[in-house]
Length: 401
Image 1 (cartoon, rainbow, N blue to C red):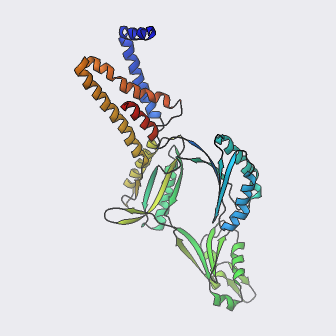
Image 2 (tube, rainbow, N blue to C red):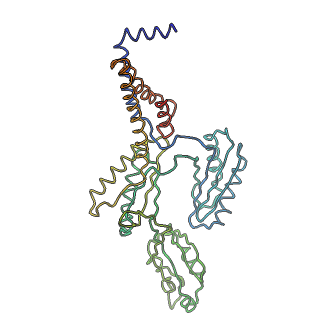
């Protein structure tokens, strides 16, 4: 009690020093607030690790036998492994590892990465290097960029290139995903009567196309109701290049692919998102933007919105880019709610105390609320706490109570 009385007495005797300390707290807190990471959810670690592998053109059964099973066998002896599940689909494989509670996930990720790298030579040559990722609760888009899907294909491709280049250059952006953009592929449809007339088999045409050395995914070839996915490794860039491939050569005649098949570009779209307004339902290409774990959502989204406005101002099409599902708006609203509650509490304390003890005393007592609120930002970074819906809720409860 004597110590507390001493602090109170010293504070009264050295009022200017106390005012200076409060001012310093305010300044430091505002500076710290600007640098505090703002996100929708807190950074939390879950005992899950995923291994993704991509191999273009591979069927689900091929992916399971040549990729998924090998990865599972390699990772099956990891310590603290509680459960392992997998899924093999067209061109991709996903293996999910669940570790026991208490396992050090960062250490497990390093072990998985090491094991995967060591067994990479055992995978097919066409398979890309497996990607190891930790389950992240914040691994969801922080904003969506919308492009009108009714624009010409070439224009959309150019716009997407500009968007991808500029958005990825923004500090804190980890990746972007594009959905709703049709894929243009080359389709080879043989004429069975012509095959019979020239005495050429279906397999001979397939092997001739596949033997051309290229890096171009051709899409599919349909023969007798059967669909073959082709992945060619050559410099074939157009339908004309495919059509000019020689299937059979003799002294009398050269038989080309174009003599036997219809070679054409086709557009494929797995699903087109729609932007619904009051007047119409517009097909849309969506660009989903993801952030790095420690990046600030609000500052990233501000830069993205600024980019879209600048891009629209310099194009003849009008407003071809728009944004939606802006998570930063929700975070900003939550922060504003805290500030509103703090200001309301401050005003209420001043009014109530003013009637009982006077304005000066009320002003001094009410200063505790903003000082307490702002000083909490000083320790956020030290304890690796982000400004998210949970920490904001804690601040609101503290103010109310």
